[in-house]
Length: 88
Image 1 (cartoon, one colour):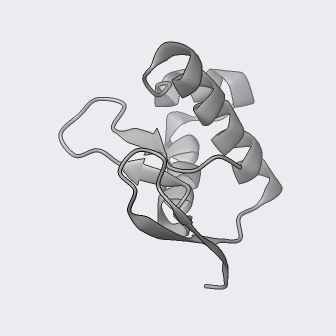
Image 2 (cartoon, rainbow, N blue to C red):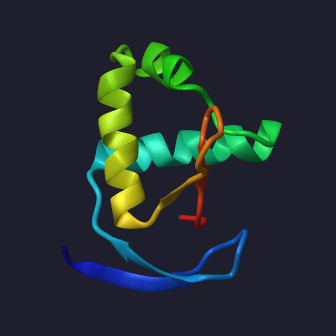
């Protein structure tokens, strides 16, 4: 895991480490962030799956990668339980 930068979370001000992600994951993150900024909550796995013509399981795999890389934060016990953490 190669750290490419350290930033502060835009919601909780925690220090986070950002690691490299794929181009698809960057696009996915940008869509999640854009949706969140517009509506105030994250899109569902189904909505993302429909957009990218993928199953929600495949979308979840990429969201898990974004969580591990520090771009997305999991919100426990909540439907659509993930939030974008940083502006890219």
